[in-house]
Length: 133
Image (cartoon, rainbow, N blue to C red; front, side, top):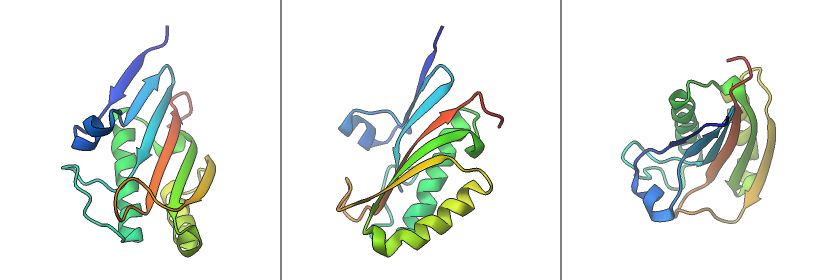
C-alpha cells in the first residue's frame, strides 16, 4: 500500500500559494521548486545569483533530511534560471559541486521571471528512496 507524507517549512508562501514543499508517495518524493527562502520565510538575497543558488541547495538538503534521503537518491531535477546565458557557467559549476559524482537526469530552463521580485533560480526534483543512500 502506498503511503503519503507532506512536508512544509511552515512559511507564509505555502499557505499563500496553497502548496507543500514535498509529498512522499510510496518510494518517490516529489519536491516543489526550492528557492532561496530563509528559515523564517524571508527572501534575503534578491538579485544575488550565487547566494540564491547556495541557499536553494541548502533548502534542498532540508527536504532530503526530513525524509532521511540523500543527494544520491535524487533521480531528476528541473532548474529554472532567469538570464540563463549570464548564469549558465555558475549553474553548471554549482550543480557539479552539489552532486559530486552523482548524475541525476536534469533539465535547465531559461525563464524571463520567477515568482518573487529578484528571484533568479528555482529547483524542483524527485527522489527515489529505493536507491542506495
